[in-house]
Length: 385
Figure 1 (cartoon, one colour):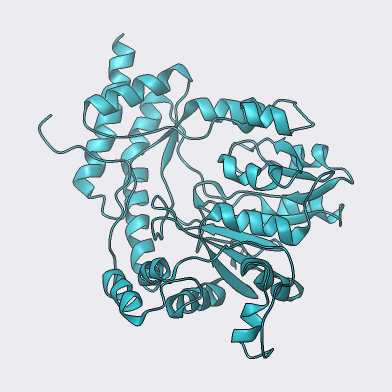
Figure 2 (figure 1 turned 135 degrees about the vertical axis):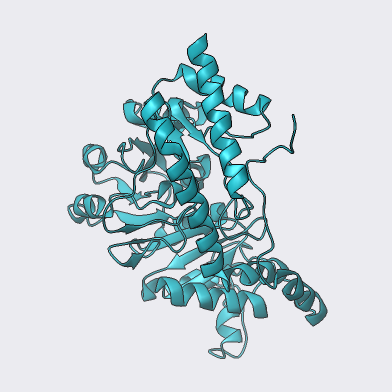
């Protein structure tokens, strides 16, 4: 190997993160709901149009909080994409809900409205679409299905799509709730973190109580009451202000970060087109009217058996690529928590053919060329037998 390996992900410092973390430490408020939590929450609220934004320890925690606010429990059904991370589903399974897995459509890899329609009944309490790779799923189609079932709530898992939009509206703002992730692999990161977007004003007061260990402490801090006490169920969902300081340092330079990621995505798109023609690859598609969040770049290989050979070949050449989700309905837990074990053929097909390329803010043009050359050489090895 003549040059350094290219990692799959490499988090970076983009603004004043280190100074802000030091300020949080020096200021003495390092627990949740501190000054930097307020700054980051206000920025996200203004950008998303949400009524309130609550920073959480993870996107998983935000999903769990959405389930509590929606009153999801035993006897309820929650529909999630079959092609997503386990936390999209387990947040509701742990509350006692039954799961149904919706297939994806092959263009955006988001929830398929046609399949969704076949899964709906009066027991469905929530539908949880995911904007895979930061590309908006068919929100219009999903909305039309939900319009026929007023008892079902939309909760957007927008872990990939912060600052993406559909028809000019920010992702995360189409459902009653939206959730965000600030995990180290995401566009904007504090290592581990998340947020709940509350899009209906009627949910704000109770959300603050559940968020803050079941107390009305937030109302006390806002001057609405003269003391606070235990009012409801809840948990300790809040993100440390130290991590919020790191997060705010990234969010305030969001245009700079998105521009870097867009350059990486467009460079891959240009470099990959000859390979797509030569080897029958499918590249990501962004629908008209959608503004993606540039979260990742993937390719779909023409046949399942090629994927592991391509990954092995790229690894030998110092390039760390990876696959993505195993369909939830095929998992042990998926079979345990569902009442609808029917197949999701598109999810199964996509899962076996999808290969994710290294993608991070500082990926250089030279590195992108190396990645694409490694993929080409690996596929040529397979073709040569």
